[in-house]
Image (cartoon, rainbow, N blue to C red; front, top):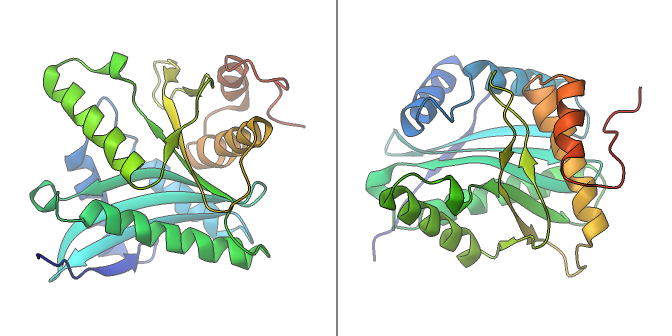
Length: 235
């Protein structure tokens, strides 16, 4: 059986060459319509440096010196949860366990964040996935189904009966309806009220502090999800 030996490295603002290579890998992997700007990654790294408990990770995986995987995630200390934002792998090495290994690595890192924050274990990990209504071709539909099956195979499940919007990450001001997927890391069942708290933390830590999206824009997007408390920020 083919075995992948991966060397993992945490990318920072100080690892200049590795950061540049990882961003190029990311840019190559996504069409410009859905890509975030490089400044978002840099701002997230800078923000994490100022935090004691909240964290942001930009992890790169190498095989024989070649970059083959990139995964980014936020640790949300207020809700003791991880938010995986990107998981990108070399398409020539897919179906050989690289995606699962990348997931395993970022989960280990998020668990370390949780313990550092004084918890026994991470409560949950969340991520966003596109809906099939967003696809434009049979190939995109096939890829969408594959991604969904991959996450479900790795113990994620779609949060049912939950209207979720990704706030606008581009200047078009468009909110994007997405599926919210979750993996429970403890035996304690995640309640709907806890999911709402996690989404609020995602908006504040990722989309405000990471992306720099204005509070009024996020409040508007947040209010569309019909949550009880429509106010994200308490000024």
